[in-house]
Image (cartoon, rainbow, N blue to C red; front, side, top):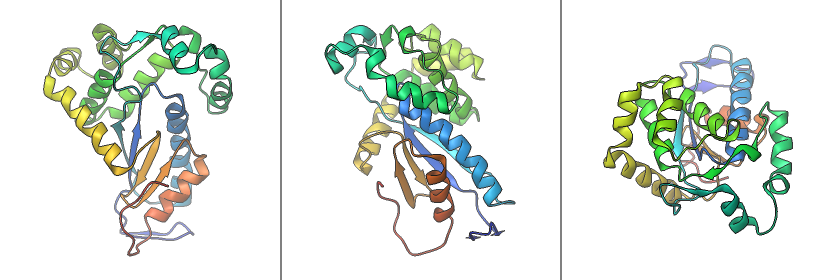
Length: 235
């Protein structure tokens, strides 16, 4: 594939962007918004380039939580001692507003194990609605304070984003689907992913953290330039 800083695109294959993240990670939500801005910048910088292919992959911040999760207040107390969630999330709330996210941490009553939510997001990829389901899950948790440990809630959120509710419910009941999330999580850790969000561009460049949109678009453009580098390592 050929692209240059002037935006010329000759015979380009679509840029692949793999996003490793968790639905209960506020910085992952911010990173998603910044990626969306970066995609707009990329389209302007490389007119005529095919639209990038974005896929979302699981990472569980709290894989040891039971399937039913735990009370949010207990989780905050265990993780940050006597600090309130308002104190803990003051900075991320401010950053969130700059990208159009009005975090409502006070609405969150339950800290979920996210395996089931990830399973539906993975299933959504097969049906072409993964970005919609990913966004719906994050919005349900961070804006609406919905309980992502509840199967009926998960199915309703997924249905509103385009999944068939019966197929979504059947997928959640499939042990293999849940094991696949554990396997994908383990694979990400073996790759060196220690924190999220984590972005992989064309399997050549990696960016860790909710970087500004400009940093992401620079990685996008760099990853389309032919060279002899090995696949990406964490940045």
